[in-house]
Length: 222
Image (cartoon, rainbow, N blue to C red):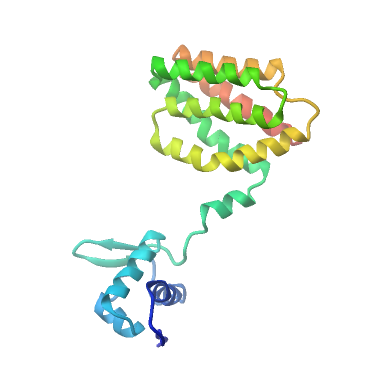
């Protein structure tokens, strides 16, 4: 049995425990031995073992159930979200935007408040004023789309949008810099229609317009 031979840290113990999980010592859903047993096997104290379990639980590898024990929920640490985003190409970015923003548009049409409509309208106007410079155009475009997600009153969609937004902004900037023009009147008009659908409470029109806009954006990639 591999043990920690020097003064151990929780991260080292977590790494050794994860290696055993990866090796198949416990299947998904399997219950780990108690803290005392694991601590003895790894040559660490119970407090260190407890912290190691907490670290792996925070990485979605283990789950602690009060009164039942510690169970395996995954056989490896999920890849960091940031790494996934950095690898995503522009097409994947637009697909993810579609998943988030189409649903947000539908919810916003049903849930928006008058104050949120006012902020959405201000963001739309700001978008219209900043169409010459690519960076400003992308920033104001993102602000408008975020105002729609805010109006959806869905904390998970907003969390996804905010976590995804830096990579989305980078991808949109890269794409638009490769084109001769961007943010023309027709493009602004599309966003006006999305706003109008949300303002009028027409969720079906909001969905149709938001999806069509992002599908057209995706088609520009060829």
